[in-house]
Amino acid sequence: MGLPVAQPGSVPKRVLTIAGSDSGGGAGIQADMRTFALLGVHGCVAVTAVTVQNSLGVSGFEEISPQTVAAQIDTVAGDIGVAAAKTGMLASAPIIEAIVEQCGRSGIGRDASVPLVVDPVCASMHGNQLLADSALDTLRHKLFPLATVVTPNLDEVRLITGIEVTDADSQRDAARALLDLGPRWALVKGGHLRASDRSPDLLYDGEHFIELSHERIDTPHDHGAGDTLAAAIASALAHESPVPEAVGFAKDWVTRCLAAAYPLGAGHGPVNPLWRLRAGPAD
Ligand SMILES: Nc1ncnc2c1ncn2[C@@H]1O[C@H](COP(=O)(O)OP(=O)(O)O)[C@@H](O)[C@H]1O
Ligand SMILES: Cc1ncc(COP(=O)(O)O)c(N)n1
Image (cartoon, rainbow, N blue to C red):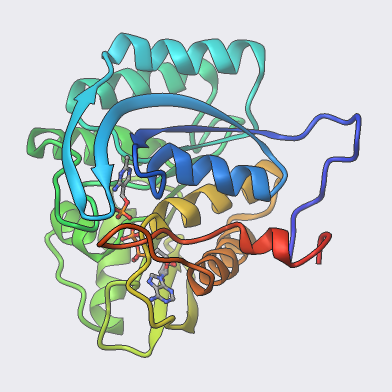
């Protein structure tokens, strides 16, 4: 498993994450940057919010101003240049609006040269809200149409489409409803179907349904799984992988990160991209 490795002296692909900071280091930009590094791409960051978070939950957060979020994207895209971007926690409607406008100016989005992965983070795994209710319409109608691929989990699918996914049929209905909002591809993640012994994700482009189903890893330590998946998709897109290949690659990646997850604190530990260091040189 691997993406092309930048040779010494050559310049790696750059990938931008637009997301919140997790003080516990398990999710958000910290998870994205770990996956970027382990996959051999250079990560750049536009911070949207600083959360106060540990393994037990998010006890608060402070938003970055929409102007500063947009300025981070502008300054990175204009000088360093990015080959793909992803979004995570976006906190508020004004922040989403600023991102949408700046992505348009920076050539980021489904019809531009830089693909955009939208992970529509609404709450943490502990149930703490990370996106204002008043931002849902902006997410649906302004950010989704800009996305190359959207990657909601089942709680996010319910909030965004009103569809309760319980089986393969309702997962297909959800994929259709998400695609109607305008992204090029929709990935309905099945990680929360805990009754299953699989973790079935469904990818859809309006024509083809592609099922990506791996064995379920029996662990409570899955903090940052969604961010890690989306960061790996963006890394593969930066290397010009077609979306189905990029998502297949990322699914393998997050499964291995889940299998190597470790406990931290009294709650949920993080998925672990560092398994890659133990595996020896690019296997
Ligand atoms: N216990 C698990 N075993 C294997 N794969 C999992 C497990 N939990 C989640 N996944 C996978 O990890 C990715 C993130 O999924 P999910 O937990 O649904 O998202 P989020 O972290 O956004 O809540 C998906 O590909 C999902 O299928
Ligand atoms: C800053 C930030 N971004 C995203 C998540 C979601 O991750 P999870 O669902 O694992 O809690 C989070 N908890 N914190």
